[in-house]
Length: 419
Image 1 (cartoon, one colour):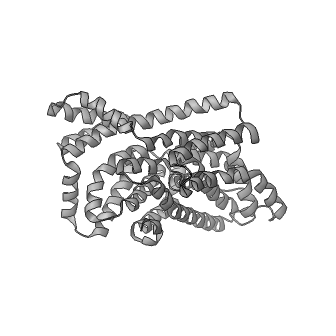
Image 2 (spheres, one colour):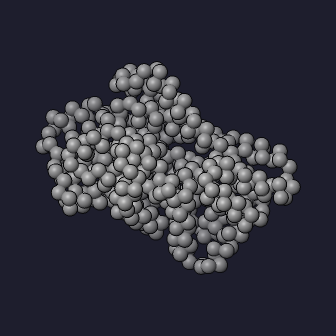
């Protein structure tokens, strides 16, 4: 049964069928073979999407798209440039910091890459930065978009593993900040190696001017996350507030968007969400089959037979997560792998919040590892560079992020809130 389920899944995936269809077909093959009534399909698909926390996902996606389209990301980049642009390689610092700011607004890696890249790429070219390395840095910085809260993958994991969204968000800060610091370090090292120029002289007047313009964007994560952690509203309510706040900024404060633009953004966000919800629905059939045939327990027993050392097994799981991220989109891999590994994680006595952060960071790295590598494709579209050049330039940033993943895996200091 296990061989049939996973064998059909990987064969269909390798011949290029979309992941959501692959999940559904491989599940159907097993159901037909076992003579299970097809009414189970409709029941499980509905049950998979019938979850209150999932309401937050479409609204965070919409909020991210609204802010990526408007001037909010541009104002954040200008402010970061005013503070750090005078340093050698200052634009590298600006790129990462802007990504961290936008990550705390959008919850999406691709949206973060697009927002920061669109604003910064022309300036990077003008200052003589290596185009491929700059595109790679922006793509790598985009991975922070799903780690620093709010995070769409964390919401999905919380639903599947029955964990607190707020606790996952709270534990995403330190890993996200460390990812940013590592990328900044690599960017500065490249700046000195390639002798990138310094920016304009530091000016408090310029800092204050750009801060006043960017304050509305800076307040966004304060309002969203402050409200969640203070208990004033739930993550789902925070997502709706994020959309309303984005609309107010775009329509009435920055006035950089018209109602027609809002309609187009809503349609695009709806299409993105439809794909995610279809994956969730079909994955619930897949998860039901796993649970009913006790497949996760069998997999857990097989892995435990290889080693009883908790750290060795965690390293093996992290490796599998990284490989999955190479071939599957983040949401798909998360929805499939989480129910497979949960019994094993529980038997090891590993905190499920900790594991949630590990799997999200591991799959975030998949956003810059071809062939899926959505952040690389976004960066390629923005810069006009071939994906091959950016892929070569991404290697040092990818290594740095893998080191961060290992630190999160083994150093409890990185997750102090779970205790």
